[in-house]
Length: 307
Image 1 (spheres, rainbow, N blue to C red):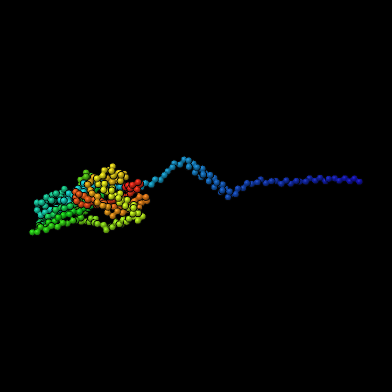
Image 2 (image 1 turned 45 degrees about the horizontal axis):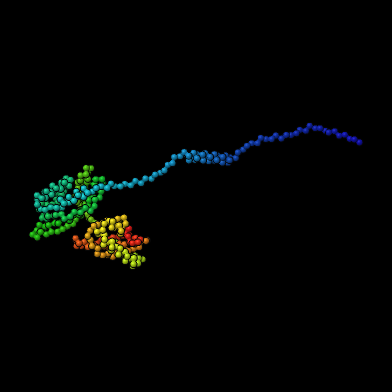
């Protein structure tokens, strides 16, 4: 038996899902990163630009050295010496005292002339003569002012029945002004001061180097004795056999070599340092001439003075 079925067709509504448009969203942190990359690119580009267009600059540090101009002080020295010979010499004769005062006009301005008019009384009983004048220092204070330290040795004679004499040595300082024309004037009175005296310094005595054997010492003694015997009358060409580079001048004097006094020899690398006093006899003065030398010696085939 055949059965028939009928399809029941129904209108089915098909629901089509509408796809929503995707929205592009940017993370705010990504914006910051992007901005930083852009800034970095601009900075890098600017750096490259500056590298190729920049002008090299160098900071120069200049040290300014101020050197005081050296001036010829011979005129100052001579001016002061002549002044001292007038200022510190006198006698009790009234006319000569007036001449002395007039002579001081060549050295002193009016105010100092007036001041020094009372230095010597008209009834003074001493006479002063100059034995020696020494200039010890000339120190520039300004462009035109110089402080001069000097000493004067006077022989003072007291006019008594025995005419007593005394020698005095005194140091003073004065200031000298030099104008633009080179003329000089003393602008302050001699003022007592001090001058250098003997120092207490004692040099360290030299000692022989024990590493130098006795044979070497004898060789050097013989070499130096031969050299100093020849030296006083030797020509420069003759000296070249003993010394290098003309380090000693020819003296052409009739000295007679007598001895080496206390020679000291010290090893310096391959060379020997010789310090020695040489005693010569001077027939003209009949005195002994004691000369001191400090040599550097080298030995090749023979000994030679190289310094």
